Amino acid sequence: MWVYIVRRLLLSIPILLGIVAITFLLFCFIAPDPAVAYAGKQKTPEQLAAIRHQLGTDQPKWEQFVNILTFQFPLSLRYRESVWTLFRLKAPVSLAIQAPAFFIELALQMAIALFVAWKRATFWDYGITFISVLGISVPALSLYLAAQWIFGGWLQWFPVAGWSPGFFYALHYAVLPILVSVIVGLGGGVRFYRTIALEEINADYVRTAHAKGVSQSEVLFTHVLRNLMIPVVTQTIVTLPLLFTGAVLLERLFQIPGFGNLLVDAIHSQDQPVVMFITYSTSVIYLVMLIVTDILYTLVDPRVSLQ
Image 1 (spheres, rainbow, N blue to C red):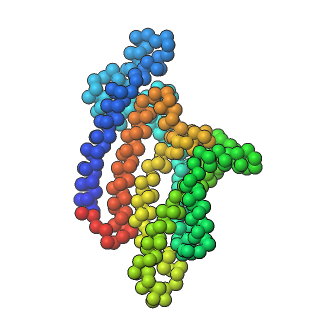
Image 2 (image 1 turned 120 degrees about the vertical axis):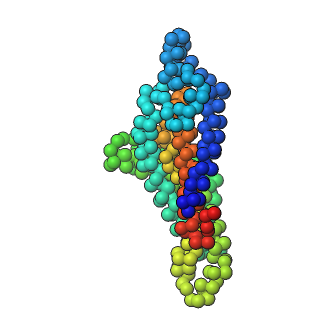
Image 3 (image 1 turned 60 degrees about the horizontal axis):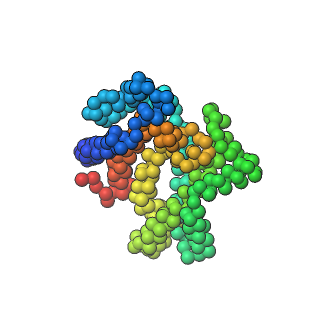
């Protein structure tokens, strides 16, 4: 396994270099000069030179590339802070919303999918499948706005938008975004896991277990669930990098000061250090998670070997 991990890490290096090179070229030669935007209308050559020095764009291109490759980013022009400081401040806010929503959503998806697979070709199967397809068809933006109007404006159970430091204050603002995020992602996951569960239920080993007198619940939650772990691991690990970056639309509408909101503000204000940092950090996390996915395959399914 260690040989495989080292080999995958070495193979990830050219991929990361390619991501950094392509993004660096886009920022250097295609994107407009951010110094011009930040200097304003009354810009002077001295002001432009000072901003370019702060951004590091007055350095040779190869030196800029090496700095970015080693994650030595200049200060954010908008916030006048290090990008690492912004990450330390914004990432916990995004995780406070995305992590609970993700695990609650995954548990509900698995439970409902196994239930409808157990009740296949019945009223429960058709009804829940219809609701799932309906949930997939409704745009997420419509659900976000409907939740704000119903729970925040009409019932006034939760704040419509905003954020506050402190666990209990933040929890008051986080409940509604978490609830809506779970509802938005529930339909697609139920359909996905239901399809896989039905394939497993019709497999030979399930018929053999029934012939031996194993109960339906034991077959579902012991045998079928075990074989569902491969797609569950794949879906879970690929989604984990998004927990750090946050949901852009969700954080924007609910005015959550997380990483997704930071990315939108950085793009609008042409804050290149922040945009580059989010791009590179997401790429690194994604590559690491792909390696973790392969390792977890061997733990949940003994038939998989790392070669």
